[in-house]
Image 1: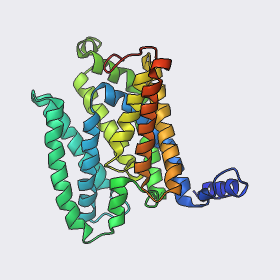
Image 2: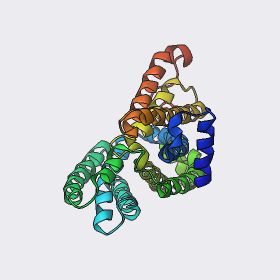
Image 3: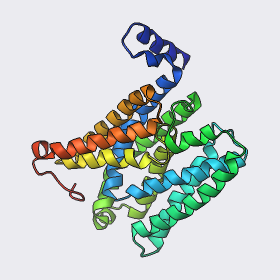
Image 4: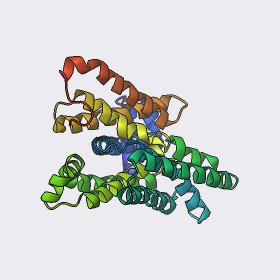
Length: 297
């Protein structure tokens, strides 16, 4: 990493980059944005298609409990990976299990689990904030460039690479199972297995991005770019690429702005993503020419 930091300092000294990139945390943030932006955009297309938007928010909220559990189990404050990934995966699999074992609607199941994770998270946070650095907790909740470490960046890169390859190889299967479960079964696929598989991939990606975006705002970046892309896309391929473009612009531009403003990176990324959505909404009559609505892609 030192080579990369030195390289960015040289580019900054030459005037090719803003002066703020002299700081290592900004370089880490930019690399994280370039890694997670495209992946969240791609995953968001399936999330929107499967109507799992608030599912991701529940995973984000579960991160509070995961961090607290990790700290209470003795993990370092800047690396509660076992507690974070473990608890979020348990919550994701629990929601999927209940969904496949009951006739309750998705929003009902998500609402029940969301209430549980919020209650548990608040209790555990009160316990741990009296013992640990509150800024580490704030970094998970709202996203923070300052708390993003080299280790976090490595975990993010490995997670994104693995999840990206698996997602790309199974994208068509995910979409087919979302649109037509009967046809998927006829082609020898298991919609239930694919649902569990996608939920695990999505959870890993969401959790890996929390340090940059924050658990309270991760819903925005995984859903809003896909929603904006859906307004303009006339086919599935354009839908995916536009979502990737919107998400990448949101993360990179939001990161740059947060470097100049004394606010959490996740909040600025959320605002930029929302502005892109409304821009797509205004441009839809000119560019989409009556493109597909929700559920038509």
